[in-house]
Length: 106
Ligand SMILES: [Zn+2]
Image (cartoon, rainbow, N blue to C red; front, side):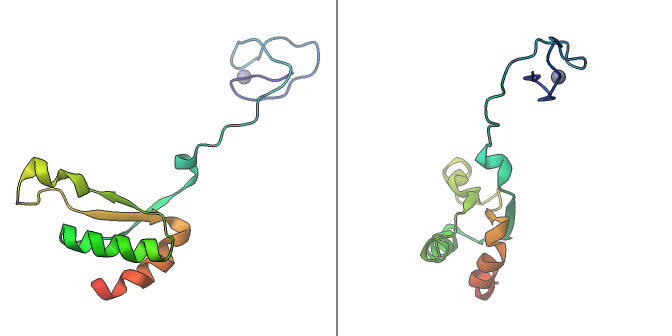
């Protein structure tokens, strides 16, 4: 028997988790793995403007590196003066490759 909350395994005959005080179940569903929690995103670049963002995107896409860009869609909210810095993130396992690609931009 298993506790659905803390996923502890208990011997047969025990019906309630000692820690969580909830009913045990016969079998546990496979643990859900959320992609977002698995990927550690690393900041690799602070583009100066959206033109640079477009260029960086094309570089990353050409190497099939997944990326996430923060601040990209805030231009229209804040007008021509950029108050929110642009930040480019890639999953940690791609960080070295991305940094290598983007090193000429700095
Ligand atoms: Zn429990």
